[in-house]
Image (cartoon, rainbow, N blue to C red):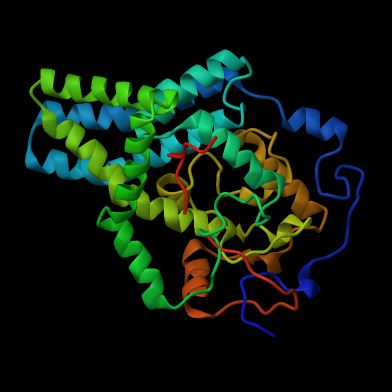
Amino acid sequence: MATTLVPSNDILHDVLPTERLNERAKPTRELRDELRRIDNIRNIFTVLGALVLSFGVIGLAGYLHTWWAYVAAFFLMARAHVGLNILGHEAAHRLLFSHKPTNDAVGRWLLAYPSYQALLAYRRSHFAHHRDEMGPEEPDLSLYSGYPLPRDSWRRKLRRDITGVSAYKNFRGLFFAIRKGRREALQILAVQGVMIGVSVAVQRPLMYLIWILGWSTLWRVSNRVRSIAEHGGMIRSKDRRLTTHVIRQTRLARFWMVPYNTGWHLAHHVDMGVPWRNLPKLHDELVRAGWVTEELEYSSYGAFWKAASSGEVKQADVAGAGSGVSSMLDFRD
């Protein structure tokens, strides 16, 4: 048997369907209607909070205009871009606001474009990811495959992220899309131009420098480790317990790396129409049904990364593997 991150068949209990879940673990109609409700009012404050933790942090650093304020802002921008990216992902699923024009306007202009995310292009490719994880149309297959991998290879990947090499590849794609006149690329450029103009107008160009450096380094690391924790080393299957990891959520991880309940990722892939606030409820339903068990769960992100980079993993009698880190900076048609 090969060392793998795929759960073994003997811990995949066949308990479906139930009264509340169908044979694919999706909620039945009554539960689905409850879980798919979007809380528009609370999401307004969620978006405002994300903007305070991003634009507000940069603005405060510029106001204080001290070296330590800019250093603190640089580290906080790792969390800021996580928040913008994940709420942008929610908008890509049309789950941020029930009014679609509002959902897309907020998602694009306030969340995605300031954080170099091509939301509309991302939406098209990301839905292929949900339709068939690790399948032939999987846009992030190169990101998720090959795990577990040697620690020196893991360190090389993280080194490319923290030194800006990965970000350079993304920005190169944006540059070529701008040259080709792609509409969304030009819109991202316009938003970034406004941000640069404001920082120069208030005589604080360091504000924009910190913004882009945070995205290009610390956020790239965070994005990779989160993405691998979601699907790294898994396989193509109709059983999403074989495509998506289950990792116990802690307060620290939920603040820095997986805010807005994105850590309940198996629930998200079971039913991608459930908004972020209700993912823990769907996860609890999966646990109560016995479909998700303690044996499937990693005790922490640290425990998962140890397994993903050292070979200390569960054994499986399922053949195959999948691998891949992605950004919403994607202009594929």
